[in-house]
Length: 112
Image (cartoon, rainbow, N blue to C red):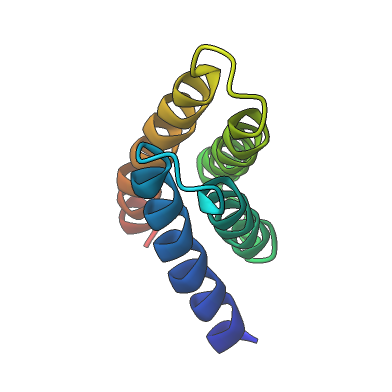
C-alpha cells in the first residue's frame, strides 16, 4: 500500500506540474493533465492518514488535505478560463502544502 501511495504522489505531482506549466501555451489537454494529477496527489494525501495522538500533527494533516483540495479546485477553475482565478487557488494550495511540508517533520522530530 505504501508503494501505491508513493507512486500516486510522484505521478500526480509530475502531472500537475506539467499541466500547469503547459497551460500557458494554450494546449487543450493541459487542464485535463493538471486536474488528473492534482486529484491523484490529493488522493495520495487523503489515503495516508496520521495514526498518532499529537494534536499539532493532526491539525497540520487537516491543513495539508485542505491544500490538496485547493489544488483540485484550481484544476476545476482551469476549465472555465475566466481571468485566471485558477492561479489564486493554485497559489493558496501550494503555500499550504509548502508550510505543512516543513512543519510536519519538525513536529515529528519534537514528538520523538
